[in-house]
Amino acid sequence: MSDIIIPPESIYNLIPREEEKPIISPRYMSKFREQVKIEKEINKASNKTMGPAQVDVPSPQKYLLKHSKEPKLPEKKSFKYEDANKPPVPARTDRPLMGIHSNKNFIKTNAIENIMALPKKPQPTYADTKKGDKKLLENSGLVPKYIKKKDYGQTPEYLLQRKEEVRKAQEQYNNYVKDRMRDGAMKQLADAERQNILQALRKNLDDLHHQYQGLSVVIDTTPKKYKKERLELEMKQLERDIELIERHKTIYIANY
Image 1 (cartoon, rainbow, N blue to C red):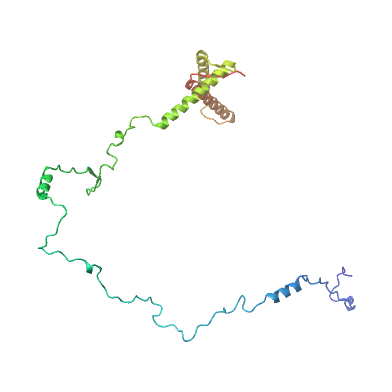
Image 2 (tube, rainbow, N blue to C red; image 1 turned 135 degrees about the horizontal axis):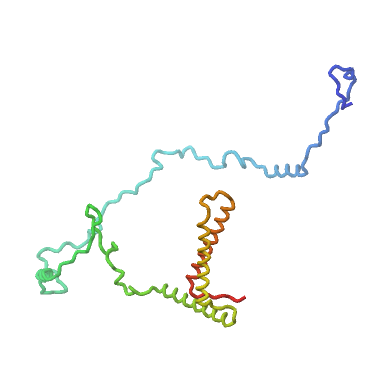
């Protein structure tokens, strides 16, 4: 009957129907509900997290007075000179006793020393502004101080150390080459063979260059493009090989 569609005006509407109540699942109740209630009552205290603070209320007689928070100056004291007990200045008629007596005429001596003294040389300066501001020439970098050092013209220590390391590395390499040549694992390329290889590489380079010059001016097809790229790669490789053989006079070949 539930699948049959009944129009609003139908005789079947006069038949009483049973009201279907929806099934409601029981409400969830935690098993710790009673324990939480007990702990809440035990830990409960008035004004624990909110409310006025439990402090002593100030007395009404101790109210704030005017200028009560201003800094207080120390009490005034009568001023007294600390050197009041010093001995008085000796009179003109007094003749104090001196420990050392000398008959030297200091005025005449100073005059003679100043007359015989050499004049002071002014410090060298330089002016670097249009207003004539002067600075000391010694700190300007224009005075050649470095040539007056003891180690001037000598090879630095780090260069000598690096030269010694290069020499040791070359010596180890030479010993390794000698051992390998003694065992027959490698041999040195003769000068005639080296010149023949260079000549053959240059001839191949000239042939490839001649083919490259004979290419079409307009590269409008894929085969032409591939041929041009192939010739350029081969010529670059030959140039690198020629440069490598020309740079190294001694060449070793491994025998495998």
